[in-house]
Amino acid sequence: MDRASRPGPPLDCRPGIPAVTAISPRDWRAAWRAAAEAPLRNELSNPLGLPALREQVVAQLGLARGFSPPVSDVVVAAGTSEALSLLVEALRSRLGRAPRIAVEDPGYRSGHRALTSAGAELVAVPVGPDGIDLAVLATTSADAVVVSPTHQYPLGSVMPVGHRRALLTQAAVAGMVVVEDDYDSELRHRGTPVPALAALDTEGGGRAPRRVLEDPRPAVAVRLRRPAGLGRSAP
Image (tube, rainbow, N blue to C red; front, side, top):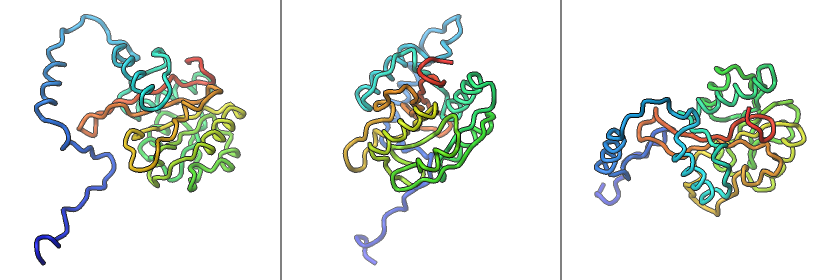
């Protein structure tokens, strides 16, 4: 076999393994040094996240996803698991009981474990070519539903705009909170971008846990979500 016909190196398709080859080690080390050299503050950090970071998150959402929530609606969490745990706590506070949350089947198992660990009752809803099955979802009596409409995990489908609007309408009628896991919308492999659920939401049910920055180490991630609850008010 000549060199030209030899197969290339295998592709690593494991989920959650970051690609670091595009990052300059020099620039990365410089960023860490700048952060380490910042003056220490004799005060507690803002529990919602640094205001400057939250402002930049809002600006990026307006540019990339077509909606700009108030800065006060942005919470920086230490990964998806914490964001989903906060969601469960907020719903429990509002409802006075463990929330019933519908999830995609198949779906993001680590997120499902975070929900159950926080005390939620999960209801599995099958996924079709257009995303989560709305007919089945309507029978669940769920307080919230977690979906990944831009790139369904792990099947990879994209939820059409009509299906997204139908989901939001159904959620508004049922008083159901919609949790949008918009984890890789900036990475468009084909087609034109589809609006985020939060950009289409006119009833105030949408909540958007969304990856805005990922450290090259899989254990460190930053996500944002609008404060969870029923309607637009924070818990």
